[in-house]
Image (tube, rainbow, N blue to C red):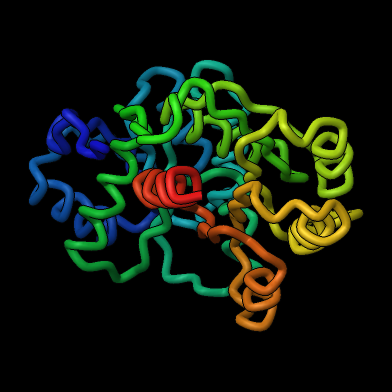
Length: 271
């Protein structure tokens, strides 16, 4: 199973959205240390959008708090614009509050880099971005990847779209989507043998991810279908409850494609 991209980090073109000229220089210097010199800058969300209309980079890197909007709004504008929607978005922020970061996690950023960050933090985040720009298909011993059938359950259309893109990049194309846990149960109940894997969010209305797992494991008596949960949940008690419900693996939001590949390799090939 190969995870190494042929895309070189130094080839990246980047739009850096940062209102502070000092922070802009610091980040640009870190990028230059990686050989990245093709950098455009913008000081606000509106300026970033105008720049993107003329120049489409490989990656957008932005602070969370901009003079005219939150980075969450900037992500949403990018993701809902046809010719921009596939550009990966990385956040750099000193923010740690769940309530501040969860909306942008749900919007489908590829990485969240702490501020201040180390050079290794930056390299890891850049390599995660490259997994989106130049993806490689996962190779499994017991499955042909193009034949793997996945049910994706998430109440956020943006989050579902992000998960589907990650899976598509790995070579998985047979994907069915459900808007929440209850619809997920309905779809799965109609034909259990139609799926090889379930990927679900945790926080959803009607029926959350834990309840979905419990229903499948207990009410449907299905202990063998691998279930991968993708969540931004940080509460240890809730995470323990998810584990006890019978989840096969838990991925953070935003999750790194390589981590997802390794987890898929484990839950599918070792199932």
